Length: 304
Image (cartoon, rainbow, N blue to C red; front, side):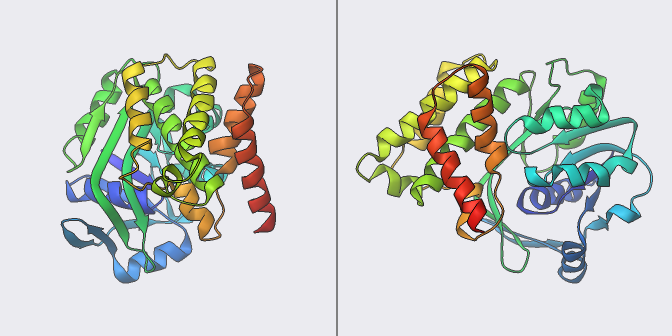
């Protein structure tokens, strides 16, 4: 299977590297700066088990040739419009596109651009970031990759994707209910991002502060009400696990949006929080805590 990994940051770099190490034909689509960095130093993985370096196959938008069987999109959500233009020449009649982005807005955007039959569901769970020299740093052993047809019908095309991905040295989950997995990932990441960005700290600091637990639970409840109104079929055991994970004061957690914010980078405010508010308005739901978070993030973006 010919695979194009759109992006070689922490997510694309890690999972793309594992696919390449498993013998898959993987090309990384990157910008000029990342291209030069990877050409010079290779793709470096720093994991709890040690450091690995590989020489990746690289391409830039103007050098893509031929169609790919699978395109995995791993850029930040605010870069989606540009990456859709970049990958367009690589999309053929049999190409499948698997976005691993935060939120859910990107699914409709990709379907509108390339067709509903080409977009499948995907998400990852990994604690990883890029180091100062462009190395991919995996902070914990967690490295799960979920994928499946958005309508739950995992046909022969999806079976081929599973065959390519399941032996790539990561924990793969071939799901027949990927939409619920996507809703639950959004519940987790948006709650985490909201409380960390609003309080400017990790969950341990928040939970050990006066009112911190109530803030986290309040944000969680607002988000759960929104995604339920939007079609999420609540799985009580799953949502209870998410809240339990977030509420553990012994485990300090932060979101990628918070880490981007404290470094002064652009953030996925509209995709992670703003889209929830639009959906809440559609159902006349009161979300005062989410509104406070959104105002906070918009002021940050104005001040960048």
